[in-house]
Length: 461
Image (cartoon, one colour):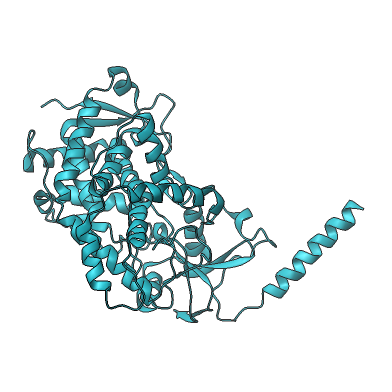
């Protein structure tokens, strides 16, 4: 009896799959997989790397895989990404979330209202520049260095997970800008930090960006109440009100400002801290590059002077290192899914309206036809024969098109000032008490270094 039931269920699933499977002949090639389970039974832990190999070895620059009975198109090369997110930006800049818990710009559909709301983000960032963000970042750098200096010697010698030390200073940069205060590692503040840095998305493996709505709706309502009590700069809202006063629908409201601050806390803190964490781990694993960087820091900045963004252009090795960290370990290896709001042609392939499209940033930045030994951490690849830094258009950790990350400049400032401040004072080494750690990282939505301890040593000046 059970065998008959199983056979009937399997037959029904196959029939449904066949009915669903009628698509255009010009649709990209790809992996149909099993009924309901789709392509996931063939995938390994790192989704972005599995998809990258499928593109390189089987399907080409544009292909699909299947999850939950739906085909998702992957843009696996830089050329496909440019054609999709730049040339066809208006058709591929929507989102596939229909009922999200926040009105976050991260998940909102592309529209004229969305474009106006994005101007709000640009204006807020402009106002932040007037707040001397560099000085604030340097204060947090100094606080972090002081914190590391007083760690127990046993902790420094045995190794510690740097994520435990760099998340709070990163969080406090955004906190001070909007709240006017820094948080501490006490009981009350730790609860707020956990709430504000908890991602909106469900990061369990293979969830593929499904929102955990019931859990996060309550969390976000709690956060929003807290934000309303903060000292949000009235200058920002005053500017917004003047711009919005003649509009029929009001985009620049306190609620939308709160949404953007929420975006900054949720996405900003995690992305900034994770990138810095990767930089320290990769330099610890490649001590020759760490020494090379420290020599440049000593020459340009010195031992007792605080770093400054004015030094950045004078430090090609540091710029090359930052670009290589962005390249080899993008924090978001797969873009947040886009949705086609019109029929689109990419290359020779037809993408129907309603199709989910993702950019495989990891594949683009590790493409063996572009990068020699792409898995190797090699900042020198970004220097020319005269030792000058060469900016690469194909290192795109902030994506392309209308939905590219507006916080790219803040990210570069954060990485430069924190990294140079730390390497000015300390050496970092991999703790190998349990063997050489796995540097592949853990990949759900964010690609992060996990269970990697670093030994910290004071530099001999």
